[in-house]
View 1 (tube, rainbow, N blue to C red):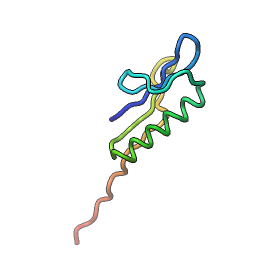
View 2 (view 1 turned 180 degrees about the vertical axis):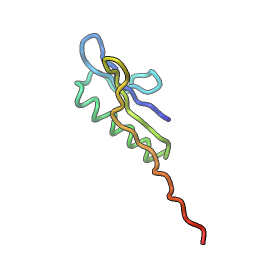
View 3 (view 1 turned 30 degrees about the vertical axis):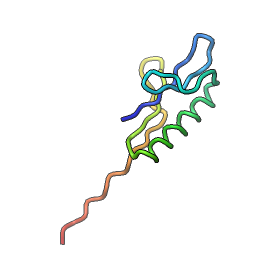
Length: 78
């Protein structure tokens, strides 16, 4: 699964990161969440791989979005 994460700077701004690298920075929280979800959704649409968006919470990581292909329904044999 590909994970995009939100990280807060010491100045209170937010960055959208993937694999520890900042893709977008100096954002307020709401625009950072929107952008991370949009980027994750686009990647999922292009690659078909499962993608999620996470941010740090007070006690654990909070998953903000998850994109995955739906399971194919089982077809009963005739």
